[in-house]
Length: 114
Length: 113
Image 1 (cartoon, rainbow over the protein chains, first blue to last red):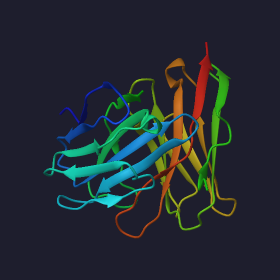
Image 2 (image 1 turned 60 degrees about the vertical axis):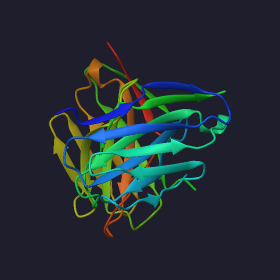
Image 3 (image 1 turned 45 degrees about the horizontal axis):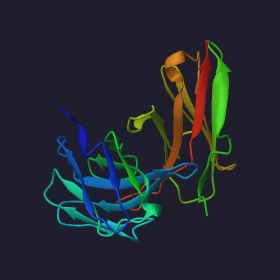
Image 4 (image 1 turned 45 degrees about the vertical axis):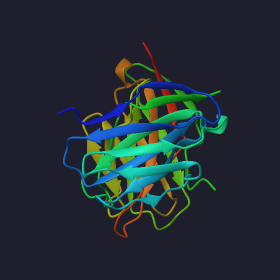
């Protein structure tokens, strides 16, 4: 089992460029999440998908879109990147997304926007 | 507003001694509390959790204590080992269905050999 995988590991963009961060899990989990981690801010939820076919905004959704392509895959898109989106992005998944469920994280994507 | 707070950004502890990491929360509707550990260039990994019906949960060298009246939890690591050097995040969730985690800002623990 690979667990949660993310691509790419690193990316540098210029302001205004677009890109999609890919995430896949092989644990047959129903819920998937996208977080960003910034110094001194902890992990903040961008979007989540409780189950295939559903997506909801988290704490910091502005400037992002998501697609739950199927049960395994959940992508995060930046349509027009801004320097404020420089961050480390983590994808996570959990079995049912219920209270107490453990979330399993991918290794992260380090994004720099110039 | 920060609903989950870790007021110590860093902590250094001698190898073999006890490490105590603290976390405070403000939302009285939180029902589950989790600790995650994160090494550089890796994603966070689950360490231990506790539900609000308990005041203590133990797993090997790791024990989490919950004081609901004070809205405070702590993670004890004993004895501390060099491999415990990492950033530790406290997280909390409610109990209303699909629950999102609210994370603290993290504490960087350094174990001194």
